[in-house]
Length: 197
Ligand SMILES: CC(C)(COP(=O)(O)OP(=O)(O)OC[C@H]1O[C@@H](n2cnc3c(N)ncnc32)[C@H](O)[C@@H]1OP(=O)(O)O)[C@@H](O)C(=O)NCCC(=O)NCCS
View 1 (spheres, rainbow, N blue to C red):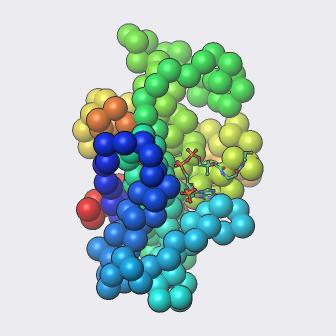
View 2 (view 1 turned 30 degrees about the horizontal axis):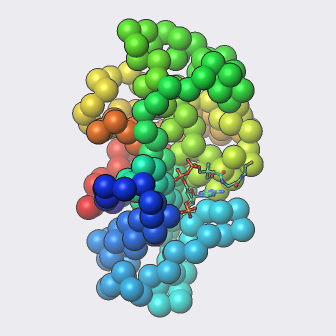
């Protein structure tokens, strides 16, 4: 499940992420009020939610950028990862350092001035997997290889697949909207995320 909010200024992204996560937990019926929810960072940095001091069984992931935040919730015992990225150019060095040869080829083949979008999509999908692993950038990004499904730049969620460390297979979903790419993965896979707010 996804919950989003947009604010006009970049400042406060951290607070915005916390608020969106709390709102998502209320909308999902996990809490009566946002005030009863605490979202803390685990030792790895992964978010963990508590309602009235008790750990929430649902899994939580969040992302914030340029005044936009998104939170994803998954059922107890599942692993979820969500990421949003503003579409922007990434240098050749960035691609060489962080993308696998197959991912670099995907970006190069995008053509027609779509390289920035393709690179943003790959990076967002990769980060969603790194978050679902609860490792973030402690896992070298090249150890996760994503293969996005092609589709229009704006519209419904489109699939991507990813292989994580140890040949771990992931099924994810991406969507472009308003100059951002949103990516989401879950395990077990339950299809595209269902917006809740
Ligand atoms: C997780 C990470 C990939 C996010 O990158 P980002 O695109 O810059 O930021 P996003 O807004 O998309 O995501 C940030 C959120 O990811 C979550 N997050 C952080 N570490 C995480 C982890 N290990 N696993 C899952 N989620 C994590 C947090 O909720 C964080 O939001 P918060 O700081 O408001 O609590 C990256 O920041 C990271 O790996 N951080 C932890 C490790 C680290 O600091 N390494 C230093 C460099 S090696």
